[in-house]
Image 1 (cartoon, rainbow, N blue to C red):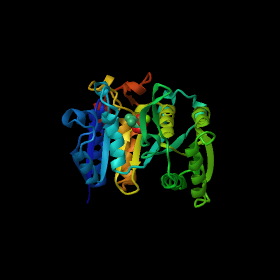
Image 2: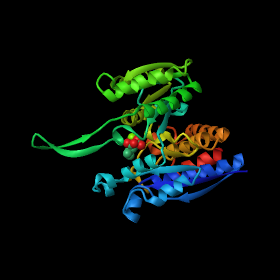
Image 3: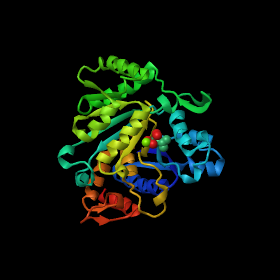
Image 4: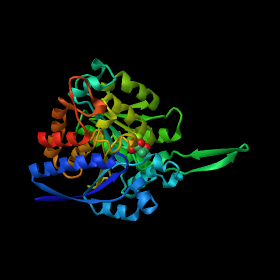
Length: 356
Ligand code: IPM
Ligand code: MG
């Protein structure tokens, strides 16, 4: 029987409660699909600062490296807002992405049928099967570039740098093209090549990589236009590949099209088996501990883990189908609509388990 070692990084705010629901669902899935899972917890973010003084303790990196996969809740909160930039909870998140070499961030934006009316976008614009995969470069660009403060014209100033190497662009482009081959065979590369030199290198490189994928149709889009096209006609997209910062922004936008940021899962991959899976939303400190958070993005992150790291396709599909079924009747407050039954975080986890 296959056995998997999972490291849980519950994090801050609603992190612990949503991860607990996802664990329930993973255990239930394991039972049903004949594999076993063991868990180890490690600290990341604000809780790590409180316990150890730093957002990413060495021990956390070691535990993650020794596991088959990592499940993360969310990090951050007002309590740590006064930490210096390099010691904020978010620095822990960037640190773990870097330390595990998680260069490819997959953020699918899929609309579950029953949630169509929760989307702020009109039904006819969304269509029946909007399914966008945003492939965000995750360990390079301005997030990891040099930055600093200096004086300019007698004024205090600050600077950040966006830089990409050809190798960094090539490997993320390949992830996008490989995914497109298993989907609609279309890739949109998003950049700002009309202004940024790093974008011009990005575009040249993506065009070169595309030669190895003659079946895939490649087009290029400036990021501002893409932001507009996502609401104007989201159906036109299959796979979007883009830089760290553009992917950060566009994936929040795409999540809203799918009804709620509380629904979207993500996978961060290293090229090997080890991946880190997390909802794309934040730690929502304002609703933490009230049992009203939506655990579905984390539960769907478990489905992605089963698909991309643990090679359990059927189990992944079973979770996704269970979520779709539950949504026909039950909703957490963020996606509540009249006529539905309102449930809390815990209950939502139980309902998905029962459906499995
Ligand atoms: C995300 C988040 C993070 C990011 C923050 C919390 C550092 O917004 O995963 O999208 O910007 O990458
Ligand atoms: Mg973000």
